[in-house]
Length: 119
Image 1 (tube, rainbow, N blue to C red):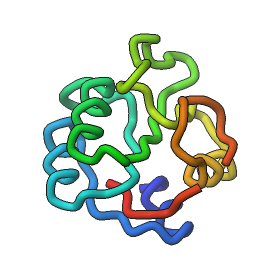
Image 2 (cartoon, helix red, strand yellow):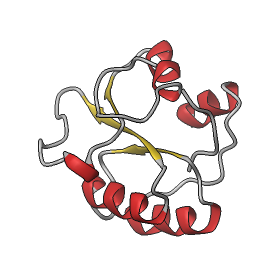
Image 3 (cartoon, helix red, strand yellow):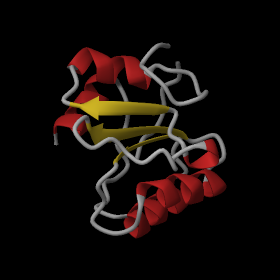
């Protein structure tokens, strides 16, 4: 609910929410967003597979992956499975806002973007 509110505050339209990878991919097929914010802990599926399949459906998709700082995602999230931004919880609202404006590129700290429609 907090992330949805922050997205709307920054003028992003939220097309949907999903608990697992299957639901998220169905939303991506339907809405073709250019931004996806996902938690590393999904009810179903893995975040790495979600990122890979989502980018197959929407090659220009920007991905922000949120993970707990105490258990960051495995290093297997590299290459095409890597998010554009890895945001570790707890994070400050400003860090999330900066992640929204980052240009696509290698995953890394918040630093610099495009607005659009997230799922």
